Image 1 (cartoon, rainbow, N blue to C red):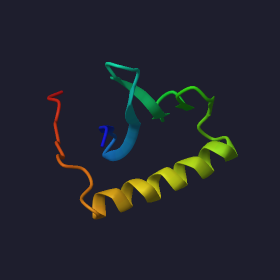
Image 2 (image 1 turned 180 degrees about the vertical axis):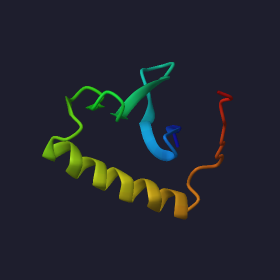
Image 3 (image 1 turned 30 degrees about the vertical axis):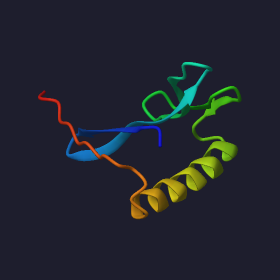
Image 4 (image 1 turned 120 degrees about the vertical axis):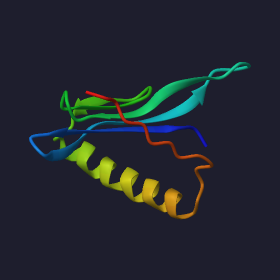
Amino acid sequence: MAPVEIRIEQENRQWHFSYITDFSYVGHPYPELAKEVDFDFDNNRASVLYSWEELITDSRVIEFYQMWERNFVAYVEMEVFDEIKVAAENQ
């Protein structure tokens, strides 16, 4: 399974998503990691590799995000990800 990177930030005692990026391996014969799905909440944009980029508030993006989130949670519950790391930045 390719990695997923989720950045959350705290501002005025409120936590919020900065971005969620789901990577995939692309290319042959030497695949490299690329952003397959990117929800950039800080810049109000979402994109899918080789497909579309839209405002994160677009109904198509909202519907896609809900499906992506359900699948991601199911993968976590099935222990599909072999490693989970949490990192904190010192401010």
